Length: 482
Ligand code: PFF
Image (cartoon, rainbow, N blue to C red; front, side, top):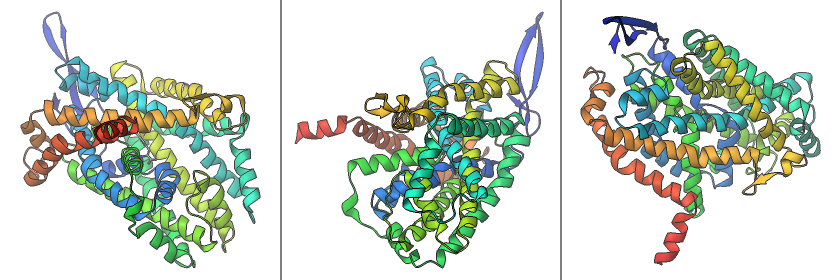
């Protein structure tokens, strides 16, 4: 493959009547390192920071969990992210095309299949939650959150998820917004939107945090998030931290591979990975401080499950001065996060449909929206426990939770381990060094060596052990040998 200019490549050589004709195909990409950073951060920062992170930290003892989370980021998250960037930018293709080009054996293409399956399973339930978040913006504008009590907060949430029509309509709205962004393309859609929305999101979080600093519960929120309590650590907590690291950094599902394929050859991929991981964690902590300060100010329990976002937050925020305005700010930031993250999930399959299957981008976006809504609607309807679908369970899980479980606990770790093994053992180290250092222009030798050792010997082992324990195999083995 030959680089013509920053973003245009000769991707195919076609033979017509014995003459090799160069088939030029313009492939879009991000225009700069900053654009790549914001897009990648837009993928990482999502509902996970708002809906998952605070409550998972809350339920698992705060800082002890955070410590494990940081270890997972360093030894699993960053190595997998850098490897995905490597595969993407080296080949400048969608996940399937990239693996076809790099992998000598067809079995490695399974990474591409796992990636696309994972992205669909996530987006099926993620778009439901995205719909609820959008509807809360609407409710905040209407003034529905004036003097919310615990009962009215609960009623509001139940009304939001009970179908059949309103939650589906909101899911359609979210998918439509995401599809419009995607239809505009990589540069005019993804790049422009993330470059605009990420700084806005950051300002909105700061507004919430400035307010939080004036609340009596702020001290308790810091204690809760940063006090180290090792007694809380257990196998399942470690598993959860790893699952969260994968989910948070959008790993193991081709997202970072696809975005990596849009990076320019000048970008520092290791630097971008580190900056994204750090910024994403800061965003999560800032959201945590804002939410928990309000929660503790009203002497409520921090670990109130997924209802934290949709019941506790409206209740405690609405009691503050300018609370209804603050709620609006909070749900707008949550909507921005949901939108940019969903955009990245969908780009994985859209790049595949358009590059491998030859569809126009618009057709690919439409097909993707139809698939998401066709199946995601069932996830949405299953969230209501009293409905027919809500009563239908597989392995004691409703469809909504099943999609989450299959993606977060099985597909993402599986994808992650395969990526680590593939890049660590199949790709020659020299190639990796060349790509990560931009042909030697970046002086990253020591860091690349450290990354390579961790990728080969630490990441797969850690993911494997945690993965086995998630399936209950590890516990059985420990019992057998003790
Ligand atoms: N990182 C997103 C979040 O924390 O909400 C979720 C996500 C986005 C997962 C994109 C996977 C993905 F490909």
